[in-house]
Length: 345
Ligand code: 5GP
Ligand code: MN
Image (cartoon, rainbow, N blue to C red; front, top):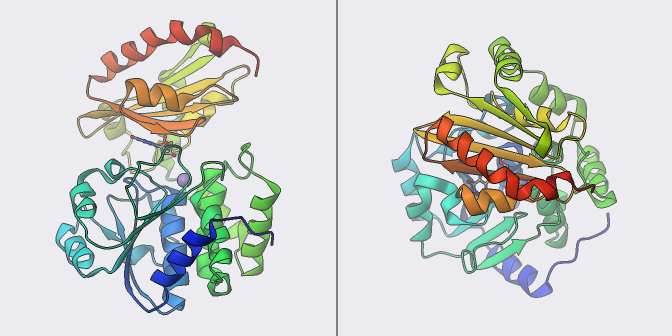
């Protein structure tokens, strides 16, 4: 497998930190997705095999379609067990922050990780890491997923022989979900070489795909149908599609975490559409998911107007206005992006 080139100094520093068995905590962003949980649990398996003692901490619940990942039952949810999280962090000698690059992305857990006096290592693929957030930062926005980056890093650290089936399946899942099943422009020949390596380690592609995409509840599908039919607005003038989901609709359709995952992508499947956005009510906020095609950057809109960020073609944000006011605020922005949204690219 071709190696990714990392700074030899950073690799040396990390090897030094991992030289002796340590108590290590791995954490990731709020509302962990396949890449966040896959990278955390895959890394857990590898580091445990290398002799370390590992705890995985998540700032909030993950969707049930990730339950199959080995080790998911032992991930400590800060919202449910804040005291347990405080204890493992108090005893930790080293913290890994995976798939996020700004402490605000762990939401209510932020105070727990910013006050720590232990080495912190970042492994992430989002743009613009917060300077000085971690002591050693492996930040590679060109790589499609943190899981892919982590496998390259394990090769560079000479730890990839510890990738067993459990780790391989976690990493595979993260790469698959963050690349839209290997179809985004972030996918390279190197991505497929990593995938080949994971399959050689025993990852079952068919099993993972089935666990993630064929385990919907009937309510989830009904909610998808309802949202597409009742709450999809196509703004042809701006090549934009908007979806919205109110708390009342979520209650009606027995909403579970992850049920709205993927809805926004249906917008991009419409001919000529450049941007799709989902607005959903959550915990007295409106959570916003942005997706785009080509050179149009949703990260900039998320950052500038909705306290968020992410990648050029996939970003998130929030609004404290009502759902209706948030929709209106967004629509009022569109004329200033009209030319860009109508440009061929
Ligand atoms: P999603 O729409 O799936 O929640 O998020 C899409 C992408 O944007 C993910 O890469 C996610 O990490 C990032 N993202 C989502 N919400 C936020 C946010 O509030 N702030 C930042 N900086 N990134 C976000
Ligand atoms: Mn990711």
